[in-house]
Amino acid sequence: MPEMGRGFTVCDCNNELCARPVEGCFKLHETPWLEEYPDNIPTDIFEVRFKNTRRSYYKNVNNLDLKRGDIVAVEASPGHDIGIISLTGDMVAKQIRRTGFTPFNGEYKKIYRKAKPYDIERWQEAIALEHDTMIQSRQIAAEMGLDMKIGDVEYQGDKIKAIFYYIAEGRVDFRELIKVFAERFHIRIEMKQIGARQEAGRIGGIGACGRELCCASWISSFSSVTTNAARVQDISLNPQKLAGQCSKLKCCLMYEYDVYADARQTLPRVREPLQAMDGEYYLVKTDILARTMSFSSSKDSMANMVTIPTSRVREIIAMNRAGKKVDSIIDKDSVVTIEEPTFRTEEDSITRFDNQNKRRRKNKNRDKSQRDRQPKADAPQEPQSSKESADVKPEKGEGRPPRERHNKRNFRNRRDSRHDNPKQAQANATPAKKEE
Image (cartoon, rainbow, N blue to C red; front, side, top):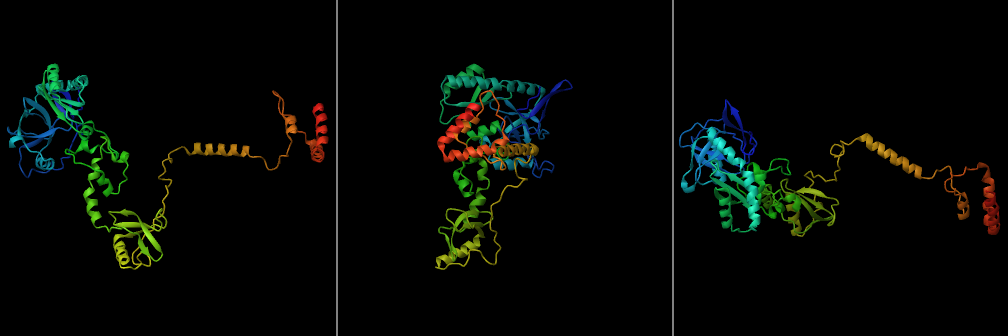
C-alpha cells in the first residue's frame, strides 16, 4: 500500500512491514551537498520533516546510528510523532542558522527510536483519516458561520492529536469550534493559521519559470514584498505577471533587489534632457547592470536612439550645468552601438512547426479565387442599358442563353442609333423582344 504524500512507500519485506523514503515527493527538500564529506563538527542534532512544510530539529539522546531517510519516532506533546530524517551532520547547523530556529526553553526534543513496524502501521492509519477529517471540519466550520477556510489536517503519528491548518483574513473565535471537533473526532485539537504563501507552498505547483515553486521547495520563512522591488528593477507593473499562484507578489522579486538597489546608487540622475549642438536628447531607458543609458532625439518616440555609458552621461551633465553644449553625445573614443528594431527570425517563430504544405495550398486556393473574381482583360465589358440587361437575363430554371458571335455588328448599330434617337432605340428594342 504505497503512500506518496509523505515522501515514502510502504512494502512487505519478509512478511514484515517496512517503509522506504522516496526522493522528490515531499515539500522543502534539500540537497545534502556535504553528505559525502566527513563530519568536521560532531553533532547529535538532526532535522526531521513531517507532512508538507513542517519540520523541526531533534536531539539523538540514545546515540542511534541514524542516516538521511530513516523513519524515527520523536518526542511530541503529548505522545510521540513519526517523521523522516532529512538532514544530518554539518548541514543541520547551517540550516538552523538560516531558518532562525530556537528550541523551546533552550532544550531540543528527543529522538526516541527508529520506527518499528507497529509504529508505521499506526502512522498509516492516522494518514488515512486526514482527508475525511478535513472534509467534515470544513462542513462544521461552514455551519457555524465562521469566516475561515480549513486547508489541511495533519494527524500525529500516534493518532492522539491533529493539527488543523486554516486561512482567515481576520481574527477568528474558534473556541466553540474546538469543542465540536473534540467531540466529533475524539482527539486533541491544535489550530494553526497560515498565510496565502504557505498555502501555495502546501499545495505546490510549477511557477512561471518552469521550475517547482520556491515556497514548496526551499523557502521556509517569507519576507514582505512590495511593488517598489519591481520599480527598482525596471520591471513592468503588470499585476498578472508580478503575482504568483498565491495572488501575492512573487517572492523572487526580492532575490536580486539588493544588487539593483546598490547599482542604482552609482547611476547619474537625469532630470533634464541632454543639450548637444544637434539638438536635445531625452532619456528613454536605463540598463542598470550594464551601466548604460539610451537617449532619443524625440520626446514622444524612440527615433535616433543612442546608447552611451553612464560615465559619458556624467560628463555631458557637467558641461550642460556649466552652460556648454557638447558637439555630440557620442564619445569619439568609445564605441557606441545604435539600437535598431529587431524582428523575429524563422528560427524564433512559433509557427515553424506548422505544416508548410497546408499553408501553401491554402494560399494557392485564395489567390485562385481572387483571380476568378477579377474581370478578364481580353474581354472588355460593353455598357448595357437596364432594359437590355433585363432582356439578356435568363428565366428561372433555364440556363444562360448562348452567346452569339455574329451579332456584334448589329449590337453596335443598335447602340449608336439608341444614342442618336432614344425613341427609335425603344422601337427597335420592342420587336427584338417579340422575336425572342
